Length: 167
Image (cartoon, rainbow, N blue to C red; front, top):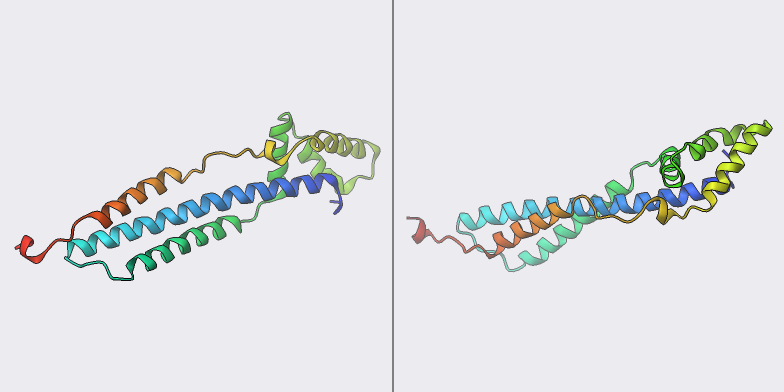
């Protein structure tokens, strides 16, 4: 594939947008996992009669931020092939495989037919904005994050069991 190709530049912009949304979803799932773990830990500690430490909120916030960052980095660092981005562009344009075919054939643009196919795909894809190819949508883990946040709030607000109440 030609490095300075306008088709490759468009596909890289689509890849960045896909990576952004993947990192966002990863951060949400990471936060949900950490919030669930904190809720379980706090609930178990409260059930045993423990009281929250003075610096517990600081550690909880740091753990939550760490979970969000780790989730975002893990999902955002995944390899996204240009062929997947070409399929996304094809679906946004007309559902045919013009961009994917042009991506595959662009390196071998020796014949006039291949050059015409690549030029046609570049012309069709040139009008495509990355936002139209990969529209913003609600992240998949948002409901899980909401439920774990409610569980964490319940665990924090749940009263501490005293030894006298248990005996």
